[in-house]
Image (cartoon, rainbow, N blue to C red; front, side, top):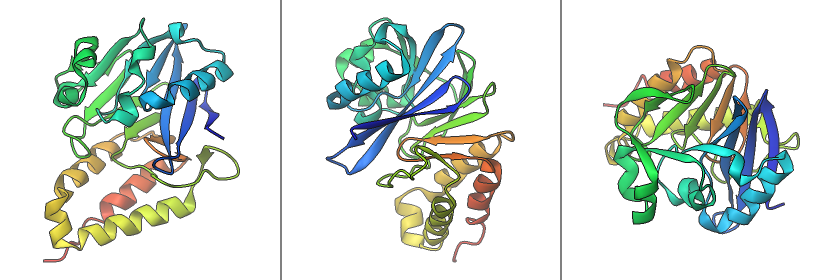
Length: 238
């Protein structure tokens, strides 16, 4: 199927858009708030039709989207922004350069390390891209972390987009552990900045759902999972 839609909790929906060129899902998230809708990320431009079909399945028209927030500036998160002509659009200033000239005119810029947009708190992570952010919704305890942690290329489980994802947790911890022990990769891929981002994510104590930029959404014991990733970084090789 070209896309999957699943209710995560309350008025939060996950939309996974299948990308055959990458053999992965590109995720977007919809939050109903005060009679309007917030969209977090919007997929590639060429996924516009699938995104509109997914929104229609939920009963939402493009005109209902009043806020669009990009977790970062890559095209699989910003490409379909043109669809939402009535929405105020946001991206961190450090990633504005990744947008097209027209998008740069349309998007408002976050220019601080922390803040709030429409009831969502944001935190600059700055690892995947210089302007990568996480968004936390205190009303639903959903943490949207973009691609700081993501499950690129992973299949969706039988139960759908939302899962406990035990094997994904183990796989991610093993990846982080191996990375922490490789001095060349630690330097090349800015491991210290990644760890700082993990620590910022784990500072949210009441997370119930981890919504990433690609693949399954994790439920329950999220703080424990994030802490396990932080602890996996504690003993680097010298």
